[in-house]
Amino acid sequence: MLTELEAQNRKDARTNFVKAAWRGDEPAALLPLASAAGLTAEEADRLVRRICLGKEQIERTSRLPTLRKEAAGAKARFDKIQAHASAETSRLESEVDTAAFEADTVLKAQCAAENDARALLMLLDEGLLPPEHAPREVLYLVEKREAEQRSWQADSARTAAREERDRRLADERDAEERLANLPVTVHYDRAKSEMKDRLKVAKKRLADAEDRLAKAEAAADAARKAIP
Image 1 (cartoon, rainbow, N blue to C red):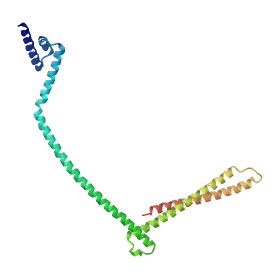
Image 2 (image 1 turned 60 degrees about the vertical axis):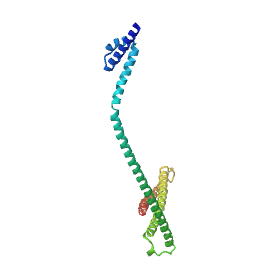
Image 3 (image 1 turned 90 degrees about the horizontal axis):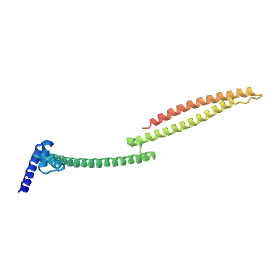
Image 4 (image 1 turned 120 degrees about the vertical axis):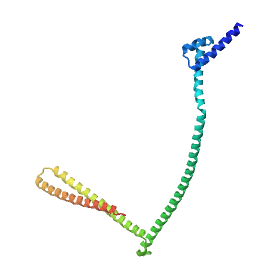
């Protein structure tokens, strides 16, 4: 009889403890209820934590209808955007394929026309194409070839002028070195005078070579820029 009464009291105390925990009562109020229910402090804390989690789950569960509605709307928007993106991707891929085909076709036609122009140039060179019948592109190739030839000649002249300048510079430096290291002999004065004359001539030739080089460089630059 007493055992059953004690068990019932503990059951009622546990029920009161659970209700108090759901109400959010302070620990001081929960402790005697836990003791009456035969719960240790650790067991009581574990139950309180589970009840707190249950409160959070209730809050989230109460939002379930709203979340379902929002999820359905978001999914519908996603499906719509995805369908639009797929259609747009297909359209763009089709445009890319069309543009690639057109570009390839035009490029092949350009290459074929350029080959024809070079073939006509050969006919012109062989005297088999009267100049008055030559297309403008063929005449352009003639003009370009002649301009390239002039540029090559001007560049060769610049190279020759630079080599001459280098030789004249070496001569001038050699004359300066010889004059500076002229040995003192019986004919020193005459040798010094002759070396000074030689140095003067070397300087004059160097100045002329530098002037020709400057003109050759300007001519080469102009010839290169003149290539159409």
